[in-house]
Length: 311
Image (cartoon, rainbow, N blue to C red; front, side):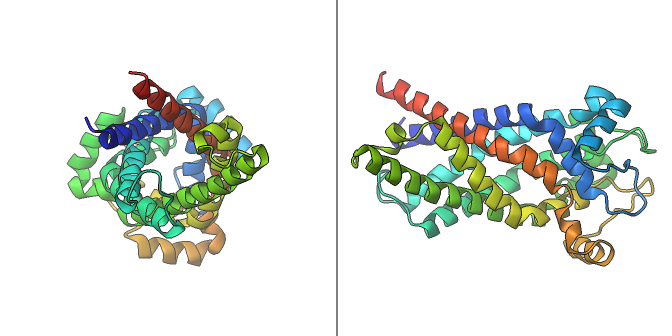
């Protein structure tokens, strides 16, 4: 295997491990976020929650630990696959745009690399996220036969709604993946350069590499900062995707027909605030999660590089 190919698989492995660690730690907040996102104030099978803490307490009391970890299997699968593919596609795109691995890319090329990776990941993983959303929205109030798990949900969706249903919410998902990933990774890379330059000058090590200058605290701060920027700018696409991916009624009628229908109805009944429902648990989940992800990713990548150079 060439060094370039090995480096790409190293980034994919680091990303997959980082994604698993993130989901395992933060899943209950993901359930709460999804339920807030689809609660549009009209007739709903979901309980009404006052805030994030009340939602967690209510779900735990009425549904037990299983409720807080609803959709955990597809969340683990989706996050692990998504992060692995994302870092793989992102690494390949960066290599393609640079003449050699040591050349620093411009912000525009970082943006293009992240956008390309986000679009490819979205196409590959949309069915997994659809199932996760459906499982997270199941409550004791539902009248329809619940899905018993990931594979049962897949079979039932295909049987009742057809293969095309697995790609519900794909359009906002594409916008979400491209914009969110592009913003996050561009912000991460640019902030990383600033911190590396600052710490290198402070230590008078102008020739030192980023790996020798940055530590886990730096990676945590960089991951959190870049995540906040990405969430604030791309969050409405998450709300749109979740609303489109809801299970149809027992008569087979979807709550929302398409992305434009979601936009019209949300603006009509909830205003702009409707596009930011669930953002508090989303920030609580994803800001520390991004820190965990980048700490794990960068340190796993260091370990794999060290192991390769010492073979």
